[in-house]
Image 1 (cartoon, each protein chain N blue to C red):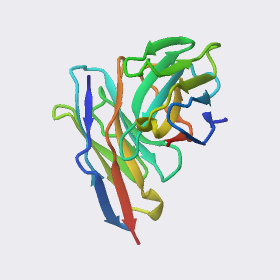
Image 2 (image 1 turned 45 degrees about the horizontal axis):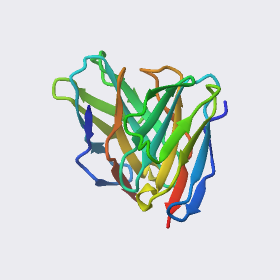
Image 3 (image 1 turned 180 degrees about the horizontal axis):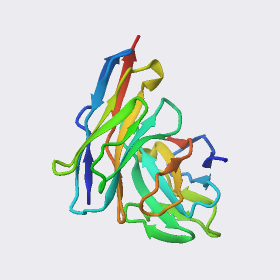
Length: 112
Length: 114
């Protein structure tokens, strides 16, 4: 089974600063998708950004961007100009035709 | 567009009792998932349906957990009898495309087993 590893249980960032959340994964498949989901306290999980493995270009969504290193099986999330509303649990997820796995999550705190 | 609906939001039961959770996915989404999220952990897939057929239930504790999606729309997850370690949030998610689409999540059902 594929594994998704988030090595940072907790991260903090100053408001308006930039933070990077790490994610690595293990797979033998060539066709897959990677996601970052955000889960605010007691609220539902929502998609932040997705990356298709066949695309070399890193995905961006406004203040959110990824650094996708396919050979290294690394998929980090960069949040620029951090806002108080960015405080949440962030989950990295891997999806293929056969599997969908989530990492253990990184709790992001944003300091005013 | 209405999102994924789940009920109840909260449930407290004694161990060995039974509980059922309901999920109504986004209209038109053929794929439905049930995840278990224990506090401080990432979601763990329990079961995946494609329409009314089971695609993956390899991590479902079948001696106590059951799920059905009889008409290929809404779904019910049942636990009987519950154990203390079943305390978790049960997340329902749906997707339009089986293998490539993003998952849309409900707000979850938080279960506390005493």
